[in-house]
Length: 543
Image (cartoon, rainbow, N blue to C red):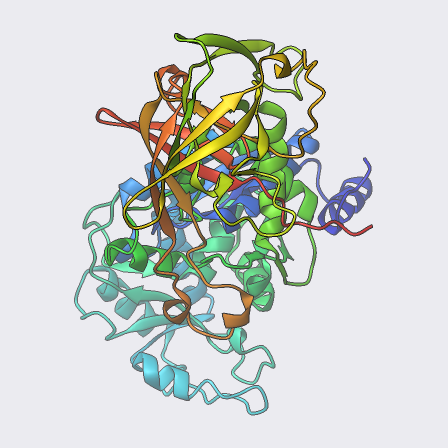
């Protein structure tokens, strides 16, 4: 099968040589928070690889750290995966295998390959050595097998306090790989587990549980991000020394990093707890539930992950590249509509009384979408920024004694300007050119400016929310997240929208002409138009 990345090249070789008979992957989140956009790459890789090779992909929850894990996060992760359209083969938890993992640790002790250590965490760290100096062996390293078995049983039975004793693998304190210098594989931790309750007061470390759980699930290829590359020798050591029958292979790939984006589950959790955002599903959040809440199409996210590909070296992707895929998808699929963010009233003095219906393209990029009707009267709203008392050079919107075309309607001329006491513009008095109707213009008047508008007679009030990035841009990249926070990332407008927007299905996406892509939301009796992505494409593809 044709390979699209280095992982598929490895799989093709192994299938060809008979190293494995099929492909079985797993997506392994820890349920200590909500998934973010960085997890989408791993999701697409694990589920996509299994699908390509007609294999299987499990959903596997690494719940070995109960103090930070919740059932809420488990359910949220499942919902995110279903939103992306992936289907798992089986759901497993590390806690499903706690009994067997414990027995594998006992086997290591019996084989003289693990020992109970009384050193504290800081003492273990101090004796681990450096990249250029070997570590020092624990004074407890040569305890007898009988004593280690007795102490490990007492750890399990709750005789010792948290941190009082740990179980360490006995490997090599002079190994050039620090991860192999007698790593801790079990610790005492009294924390209520979201699935096993208080059954256990000792829990396996991730580096010990991970390879065992992969093996017990029948995983053939354990696909991990690049920070686990240095842990691979320990992964292989556990597989080789615990007596498991099935031997999976770990392969590392570069994680996804995006400019202007918080890519830390820990810090995202802090934003929620500190009230900096309204929750995990805040539209500014890069969580998958936040992207879904914002209105980002699942297909756009998957297209983005496919386009960035799978590499061995870490890199940072421009946020504008991701936005390009959102915009590209919505441009093809979203309906068009009109809304005015900062309304300026316009009276068209010579327009007939009543409402006239104009035709409006539902989506000019979709021939099957057809047209719908919009109404126009002598009272309309335009954007304040589409009129200038003192226009700058090359200003093609409306000005005194100037002409502009109303989208899908007529050409109008500004005849008079009514000002407030402070000199700001209160209202425009205009006239329209009857012969200039869109699609049937015989007026002979040439105008360069086209602006959007809404009919004041039937416009509905709406709250329009426009978003900026949570993090300041790349020039701040050397600073901590807390120093890069953008505290002015939501801008709210009290606007006017055509009534069609209040009647369509909740969550419908629109291109608001000349403004951007927005999602329809209803909060109580209030119509909210929430920005998905701007209209301007900041991504510049290489020519």
